[in-house]
Image (cartoon, rainbow, N blue to C red; front, side, top):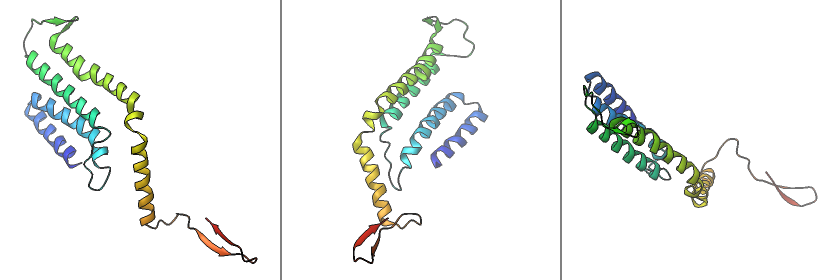
Length: 158
């Protein structure tokens, strides 16, 4: 969260200074950081992006390729453009790398997530949760109570 706060301040400063090329790259980093924060802050000392590594890496490549393409192809005051599929080149790069390919990536990721989030990951999460419950006393956790009935039969009640 500190990184997101720092990026936010940097965005405010670069926006106020009119450094829009730097601003666009910082904005891409802010977007990527917001995806990464839930994975990074999953545990006390875990800095693992799994299972989001592919998504964050793919988005980073697309964002930075798109922004670099836009800033290389676009200049203020230019009135003559080269067109690709009916769009100016810079607009085409913007649409392709910052909208279309990330959208396809998100759709693809949602379709394969059940394979990425395999049973091993789910079992590991459940095992860690069970271990944490065993180590700590929670006020509403049912306890096993052993009692002896009048007939001398022992039973376990939850």
